[in-house]
Amino acid sequence: LPIRDLIGERTGLPVFVDNDATVAALAEHLYGAARGAENAVMLTIGTGIGGGLILNGEVYRGATGAGSELGHTVIDMDGPPCQGNCPGRGCVETLASGTALGREGRAAAEREPGSALGAMLADGETIDGKAVTEAAPSGDATARGVFDLIGSRLGVALTSFANIFEPEVVVIGGGVIAAGDLLLDPARRVLAER
Image (cartoon, rainbow, N blue to C red):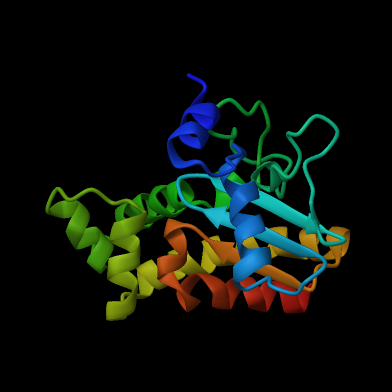
């Protein structure tokens, strides 16, 4: 389906189609948290982790247009297999995404049946990223520990991005960012340490 052409014809506006995280980076560069930055890294954290780059004031797409797949940066060479079609292991997407938050939350619930997450599991509730996000603000130490783990892993990736790209700003968006400082505080701590 020639979606670009159809939308352009119907709206009379210029239309382009691109990777979702790339256009998120462009939007942040033009109107958001990266406005005015010449060099910015964008991560969209949800089920997976998407990436977008603004380098020297321009969107970076790589040699064939498939660049900026920052979610597939390896942070544990012996880590679990990556999700989806990626043949890698230990990618930040596998270790610090919303999917990882749910997986680690389920494991923590099994280890700590007396926690809020453990009670949810015992009640037959699904332990996913949303459940962990809901349990953590109420003070559940197990859920907070899961965020510390996931955020720390994210911080390892951010350290690499800071060293490689030396951005003026790193913007983090996507559904998992609803957790706010629960996720970002451990990421910032690891970034500052490393």
